[in-house]
Amino acid sequence: MKMELTKGFADFINDEYLCSLIADGREDLPRCREIFSKALAKKPLTVEETAALCAITSKEGLDELFETARELKRAVYGNRIVLFAPLYIGNYCINDCKYCGFRRSLRSTVRHSLSDAEMTREIISLENEGHKRLILVYGEHPKYTPEFIAHTVKLAYSVKTGHGEIRRVNINAAPLDIEGYKVVKAAGIGTFQVFQETYHKQTYRLYHPEGSPKSDYLWRLNAMDRAFEGGIDDMGIGALFGLYDWRFEVLGLVSHAIHLQKTYGVGPHTISFPRIQPANGLDLDLPYRVSDGEFKRLVAILRIAVPYTGLIMTARENSEVRDEVIDFGVSQIDAGTKLEIGGYNKERKGDEQAMDEEQFKIGDTRSLDDVIRWLLEKDYIPSFCTSCYRVGRTGEHFMEFAIPGFIKKFCTRNALLTLAEYLEDYSSERTKDAGYALIERELSKFPDGDEKNSVIARLRRIREEGMRDMLY
Ligand code: SAM
Ligand code: SF4
Image 1 (cartoon, rainbow, N blue to C red):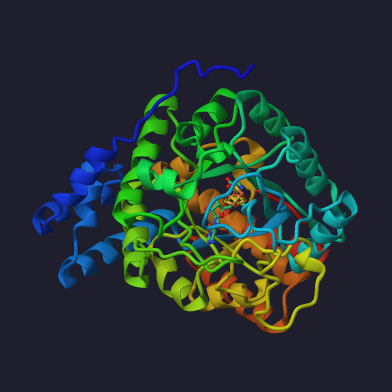
Image 2 (cartoon, rainbow, N blue to C red):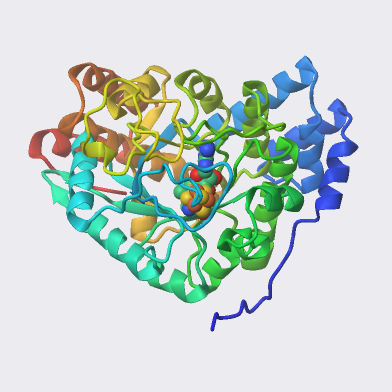
């Protein structure tokens, strides 16, 4: 018997109303300017205000939209980008999502779940690249019970090699019931991600056929409510862009964030905005495919609308798109990504992927070291920081945003320490030079005093004494 939600099932998506907001959409730049000012004063937007931003199409309006997103990102969050890697645990699936290379009706997909020994080898490889944060990914299958997920999380934390260790494990799996969330929470997970895929009910039915668990729109929509009831207050939401009008999905994501904030007092930790990629056996006519220009707009609008929430841009996007869009408020990216089950221990030539085993084609196949050097060249601090969550400062995005000096005191200093660890333990010489040059530049921005001296002292201990994990 499934436990009931104490606050009841909530359908906070009013399809007709959201459609009407989009249909009304004529650009009103004076109103948008007021909305930009509100956002820069650190206030989250309403759905109606977000819809007004979605209606911007003029060059002048778009320039101001992008500038506002850039300013919010730089002024409020600083210049850190958090890095992680996905680890696919298994691709068995009982659902039949029409866009996915794992869907059950696709007989040509080679199915496999990692054994403990295989998973250990994958984690060692990831640690040897320098990763500290993972997201474990699973299909939906009776094999992938909460107990199994909890077991894989604990295994990920337990594998250590040299200075290598995984300090944060996030999850992307099928939505659980309340008891299930309690089980994975007890294993020490970070964020639990569930993407709604599309918030538009009619479209949802189209892509998730009857007779599979995922066809239940409301069960998925309330996944995060159950997570809360199960004690998880760190949730990631997302939409798969390309199934329906991107503006509707943006309004759906914002409605979801507002619902969680209102009901539980905590908004989502992250929002993901994957675009549909080519996949094994995928031959879909997608009338709502999102162009690069629209993608850029939607990321900027999300940054402005939900200022407390981290934005994740994955390696589905190619390096050119990532290079352009990262400035509009992205806070996390994956790097050195392999989707093949067991792929971190397989040699493949260049961009080659084993498409009959993987969920979709990725756009950015650069190594972690190359991605880090690219970030450094763009004057971003690549960060492996996991501090807030480990010392119990939950809701850190809110604090980063709302508490003056928080970023400098915690985030920047932890980012620099974790970058130095990477440079000492894993980087190429080129990246090491670029990394220490950035550390010098960042240190020069600190006023003289205790905070600066403390970080300099810790950096020295990392370099000279081999100290690690000295988090603030
Ligand atoms: N199986 C679980 C589920 O569906 O909730 C876990 C997530 S699935 C392994 C990860 C995500 O990949 C999905 O939520 C979906 O948004 C995305 N995805 C699926 N097919 C895709 C494709 N062809 N291109 C890009 N992203 C895709
Ligand atoms: Fe299965 Fe998830 Fe793929 Fe749907 S998106 S077929 S649930 S792995």
